[in-house]
Length: 337
Image 1 (cartoon, rainbow, N blue to C red):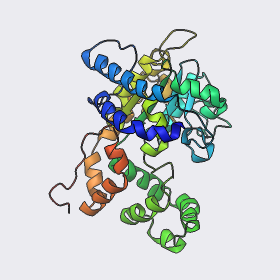
Image 2 (image 1 turned 90 degrees about the vertical axis):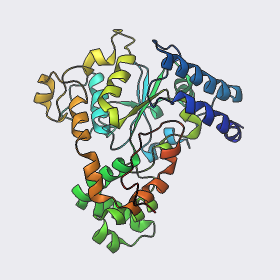
Image 3 (image 1 turned 45 degrees about the vertical axis):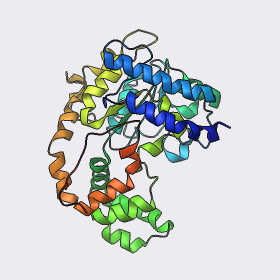
Image 4 (image 1 turned 180 degrees about the vertical axis):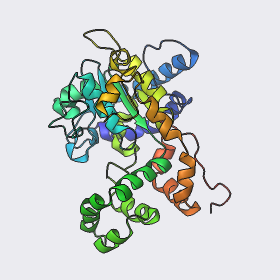
């Protein structure tokens, strides 16, 4: 019943959400700490939730994207800090994983090479809980449901350079074979996967659910997006990370996650254990500075007006969603057709 009603409410929610995220800022709480924008955002968020609650709370099913292990879209859960964290590839996902491992006081948070392997990282995920408990956490406003997002143009280029170029051999062994199983030409992939144009037009379209380049909107079921109450941005990564971590507190010590481990002990390379532990750097601060350097220049090395148009069409749901808004990225405003 709910799944059919969700679309009836979509138009109302779309309008209301536009006001909630009007400032392109991040945090929405039922009990704002101050400021007119926060009060306004909180009021609009309450309106959105009233619409959905009137229809009945959404139900977790095994087909839900956020509860399906096969899709690599299941979020991390930390009960002590009451946070559900949705990772997105190419948005500091490895650093965030190490952060949550460290928050668990795991001594292997830095040395563990298999941090994304849930069999060894010691983290809890939403699927570790019963469907009823998962529903309660996802709909309970005392829980923070957080995600960081990134404009598709730099994000997809970053995925291409990391996966198809820098890790070419692994790409050939895994992605090209997956591409061929979907009907693509294996030899074509082996020969051309390092070309950005070929990657965009063949790989992202044939394998759209790959976690490294799938749309962010598609990582969370439509019925759950209104329950996401923190959206951070890659463009303001360190500031938004700090805001998030200052807002969640341990139910044991009462300290914020920021005060616990966020404000010190981080270097520009979280894998350099000795340097990281001895550093007085804040979490993600130095990485944030690296990512801001020459981002536009790098995009101009790979994009053409046609490829920019392609990404705008292919990732239109991320560019037009009411749940987050990006600063405009236009590389070829006068040359596009």
